[in-house]
Length: 185
Image (cartoon, rainbow, N blue to C red; front, side, top):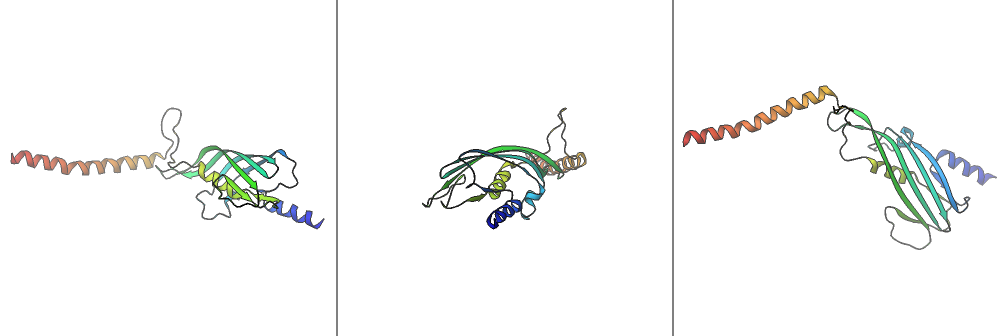
């Protein structure tokens, strides 16, 4: 009874802890919503705000666990162009293979080994890594249906003004040089 109570407490404190020894061989589904609470203990995470529906399909076999992970939702990011925050739609699929073995082998990013006597696995770090991989390198507000940018219009005006000034400065010396060469000829 005491062991069961500890197991229940661990599961409540960490919903990403999967106790697989009590599961029959076959498929098992776990659903999560990854949001602000998921990132609160990861203070150096680039992601702090998100709402990602996550479906984990665990295929349990003897000494093998295969996790098919599907994610879809939004991550709040700063626009690289205007600096305003927006919810960027994201989605992705990943697979994690866990081998229960006492043999040593070099783990890869999506294939890991845990001791044969293990009874649980915490998938939170793998989910965090998968969410991080959903972010594109370039993050810009999407366009509206009419083709106009959803970026902050004041910021775009300022960028255009600065860009025009820079272009003017960079082209002036070339023209001055050409004029002086023409005069010298």
